[in-house]
Image (cartoon, rainbow, N blue to C red; front, top):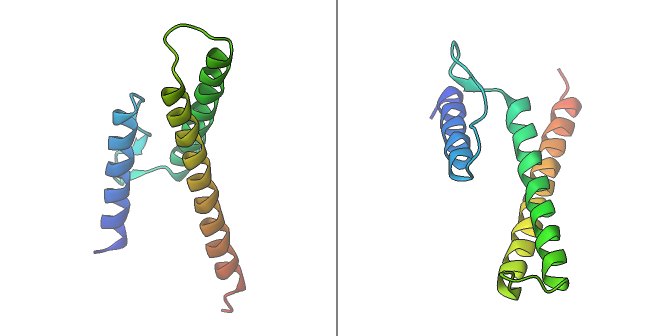
Length: 107
């Protein structure tokens, strides 16, 4: 599979993920058919932030004893936020490793 094919597949997966999450898909360049990396990165960071804020809000509501908030939902929300943050951190580590490898390549 070519790099262009991989980029296109990645763009389609990200768009599907955004639609499943109820958000607008990242912007694409119609001429090239690719997804802008900056937009994808920004959308991902916003999703992680949103998951963390939602879990913190649910936790506060549960602690205050509000109706309709149960422990199972709070724990699932906290785990989702934790997992999304860990995934983002691992992706960042991989990007930094790739960047350092490219910078150390002698021409």
